[in-house]
Structure formats: structure tokens, C-alpha cells
Length: 257
Image 1 (cartoon, rainbow, N blue to C red):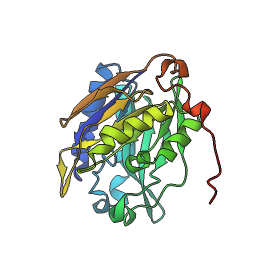
Image 2 (image 1 turned 60 degrees about the vertical axis):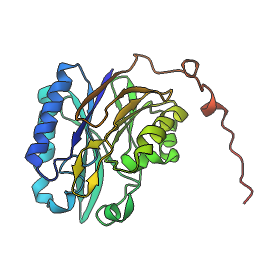
Image 3 (image 1 turned 180 degrees about the horizontal axis):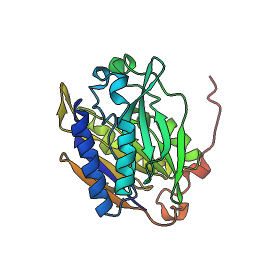
Image 4 (image 1 turned 135 degrees about the vertical axis):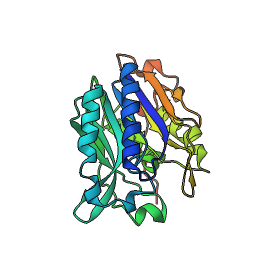
């Protein structure tokens, strides 16, 4: 299975421009034989732009995303707002190559007062089957908590897709924490970040795909573009990995408090 992420600047509220980037990245992914492409958190309409776009301005976007998947023949996981009643959720939407919805994940861990002031929190984990693998979805800050990645591993996910909008100065998330999440759970993590600036934010870039051993399979620096990984036909076994047995050997003890 060939997976890819696309790192790009935020369209900053310009939905037509953002859709053009989605279209171009999907067509490029199609030419490279990609089966699932991952774009950043709230890529549409832009991380800072959600509060400026009314729900009525969103009604045609998801059908357009479905059309783009169907035309390109590539699956897509992308960060979008999800409107329900009077609430907004920070959501990762996963579509298959025919444009059908595979899953929606609502961000569990809202970051800071900005997100807490706009979004409602998600309350559950999200998994789906695609090809011969089970995928899990997390969004940005979700993946910084070992408990959430471990929960998806226990739900038999071997690939975790993470749209993110990680900004400076938190580069240690990209270089230390996300590779560790992959290694300690023996999963592949696809971490798709924004690059460039948006208002007062400077995004880290440094998107990456990290294998179950924690090593980088593909990364981006600061520039836009694809990072591609080809996963083996068979899932990794404990005998393939340098850390091998932690998940099996973990002992649960009372803390005595």
C-alpha cells in the first residue's frame, strides 16, 4: 500500500484556493500510485479561518471533496470543520477513492483557549478498514498523548493518520514525540502538517511518515509537497522490530495511592 501526505501552507479562508491545492495534490498522488493521501488539520477553510466561515458556506465543500477523490481515484484524509446543531467540531474526514465517507474523527484534545473557545470536544476513537489494513484517526494534539495512540493500537490499528497544524516553537512534537508514539506502539504514523505562516502563527512543517520501529520513512522540511511511503503487503510482526515485546510484556500494577 502506498500512502502519502501533502504539506502545504494554509489557504487562510480562501476555500476555492484550498480546493485547488487538494485537486492538484490528489492528481499528483494519482500519478504516483498513492491509495490514501493525508492533508493537514483544518486545511479547509484554514486553521485560523473556521470562525469566519458560516455553516452555509460549507455545504458544497464536502461534495466537492468526494468528486475530487472519485476523479483522481485516490482516498483522502483531510482536516475540516464539522457542524452539528449549534456546535463545531475539529474533524478529520476520511474518504475512499470513490468519494465515499470512510470515517469522521472529532478532535478529542482541544489545544489552548483558542480551540476551546470555538470547538466542542470529540468523545470517542475512530477506526476504519481500508485495503488490508486497519486505520485509526487522531488530530494534532491528540497524538501527543500516549494514551490515545495506545488505545488505537489496542483496537488493532496498524496505521494512524494525523492531520495536524503544529506551530512553532513545538518542533519537538515532530522530531521526538511522534516517532516515539510510532515505536512504542509498533504502528505507522502519518503526520501531515502545515508549513509557512497564517496570521500570527508560524507552522513547523516537518511532516513525516514514521514506521513501527520509530524511524522516518518519508519526511518534508519546510517546503510544500508530497512525502510518500510504501508499506509492505504484510503488517509488521514483533520479530521485525528492534523493541519487539513491550506491548506483550507490559504489566499493570496498582499505584498504591
